[in-house]
Length: 304
Length: 169
Image (cartoon, rainbow over all chains, first blue to last red; front, side):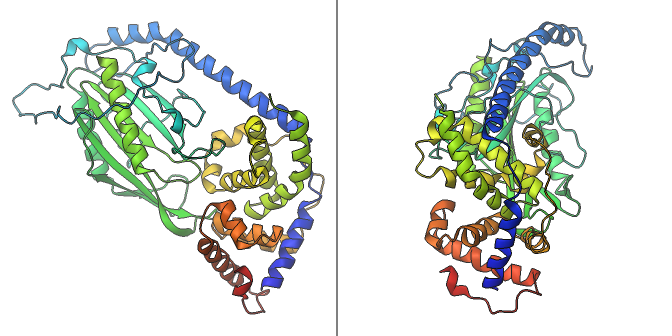
């Protein structure tokens, strides 16, 4: 078998050699063009968000109760797709929300008067240099939660929302290594007193969807379950998604790909941190906890 | 400042081997070209620091391996950004042996493919593969052994000799 394999690999090498790659200058030009396009896209995104601020804020302010949310409103700082450094915040575990009584009006921890109508970049946490994969934050549209059997928790009573995607690397990884994971992080402002409904709906949606087919892999299922864990903000929900590692044909190869998602409520604001991995990686728990703290603290500081 | 001459020299001297390796860990020749070009594009973006890397070719192979995971294929946005450049292939389809081997390799985890390619294409000893993959030598032996066992199952017509486990030690 070994000699046979050697022969097969030689055949593979012989088949590969006539296939030419482009000249190196073409590869260099393409890489540089992509880098320029990425920078242009970042600037364009910021410009669109700035232009959308006034329109979005007007729509949100004009909307009455129970009106579907307007488009995202935002006030990004000029040229900043990465928010300022956040230091090393520690979680606050002392502000647990008391359980509601049926007769009580719906209240979140903060008074309605402070409900913001736009979300600045500083509401999003900054990665420390050791974890910064150098990709910056991309504020792009897209889902802010994994699929949950068609449920849409937290989509009602939204005042405004922004979401970004960013890559992360683990401390100690080589500077030139590819990232170790990626986040989808959203910050959503709810109407006064309704943010706790969003977390309750999310818990129900996860409980109601223990298993579902994986969208792009026929025959493969993804499981969801709520997890215990440290509390963040006024209240928080943590859950995982789990799929078996598969080869390119979809056959299991052993082990699971696990991603963590945490929603944290701070007053009328909910931030969701959804770790999506990078090229098949699972979530690193300690990194995720540290970034959950950073996300919570960034929202706290923004709200003052 | 990135030095274009040193990058071009690196590219010309290593791209043939990189493409072989890409074919051994990817799904088909076209995808191998995608992966390898993407890896070199990443190398160029970091060429200022990569020139000081003790083994830039190993770094390149590591990037190719990671890009070859199915996760990357599902990230269509990133994939579109890395779409192939240059003229279409003007070479014929791969030979029967290559098709058989690559078809069987598709059934193996990327880590097994990586170890097998380094062993059979580059004649690398286990210790060197372990260093490149960042895992203990025992893990590499296990990958090679399991990979070959699996290939023997997938290529029954070729598995006429007994497995020689010792030659991966």
